[in-house]
Length: 66
Image 1 (spheres, rainbow, N blue to C red):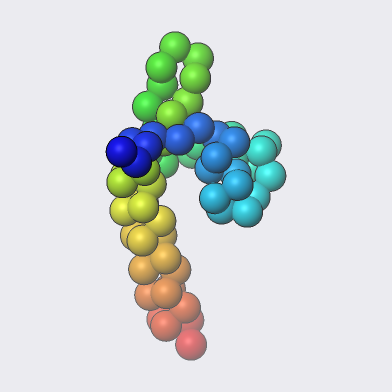
Image 2 (cartoon, one colour; image 1 turned 30 degrees about the vertical axis):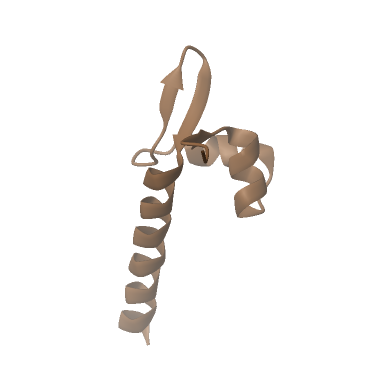
């Protein structure tokens, strides 16, 4: 069975960003997280959807800016 969630360290590794930047991202409004006590967990499927939306929005902005 694949993991349903991952932590901030895994988020950093997955995105190729630093741990502090991953925490900053996780605390951004609209980013999909679940708090379990003090721990931050990121649902894998919600993260993938969020990432696709971000990429689509950035692509649309790039097209409008050309």
